[in-house]
View 1 (cartoon, rainbow, N blue to C red):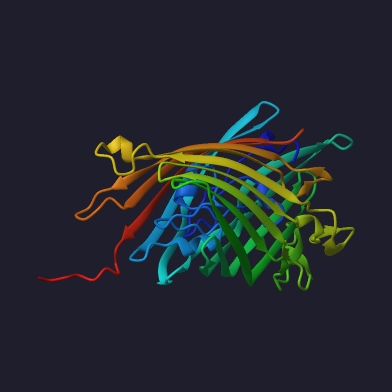
View 2: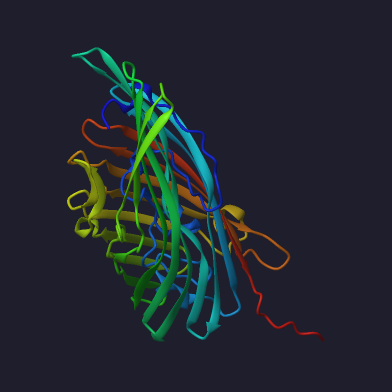
Length: 424
């Protein structure tokens, strides 16, 4: 990654539904790309906290056990989009990049008493980058130019349910169809040669993903309670066959020689665990903390070395993410508008899940501020417009530093679709 920004050029991003390339970070060339969480509009204002959050007027895919809290007459839809500006800095060389797109859409309704059903589409990872680098071979004074480019990502179409078998305990599960593809290429050419070498990496993924969750409510008083939470995602092979094509082109005779390599069942997702704690005071205040662990270190990943494209251990590492967030509503049923607004804030830190040239990738620190605005209609103010801003800093020794500002906008549509109308 050294010296990449000496001639860094951003790709022009084409944003597609569900943010297939909602990034332009060169770090998305590693592993399955930049990983996302399952947060939605209210989580994002608290920097992604949500494993122990449960309310009857919110969809919370981060923990399917939360679905059991759904209000009896409510039908919920939540959709969001985001845009981000990122500053890249390497040894004093700075450049900016922009990206954005539609993030997610989720829904939730009550099937039976203490049983909620959710569905929707969420991103899993994003890949999107393009940069040039030039290196001069001092012994022969030859310039070698390399272009690195990639796009793609994974998405999850899910359906889930949460039930409350006994009053303090809720459990749930999400079943996701995980699909997507990635295309990466590295093209090199020399100023003293008529030959150009291109390496193309690709994979088409179609698999599944399971997420299990539990929440335990512990009342302290009439208006106060704690919620303990845990989640588990089993790791497994994606049954995908990553492919690599090496093409050597001779421009003088317009001839190209290509070698194709393929690895059967070469991609996997890791086992993951999550632990959460939340404190709630009536509908005024809630504070939460999450710890998420992904066991990437036990997964082998494809690499091309010494003429062989094969799975190799030691390229990925276990990752950890810790978030702390809060939401405060002065008077949820107050007469004044500002009293009904939900004020949110959060901070967090995360470690990478990959190594770069044998060194640990960039660590991440983040912070967010946001608010939820109640939307008035002819009947109530149950729907919410959520707006939040998040700052993310990623850095590692002798690597590119990223400073990103992301704007998130989400709308939670909350109506009493199942109410019976009485005519007198």
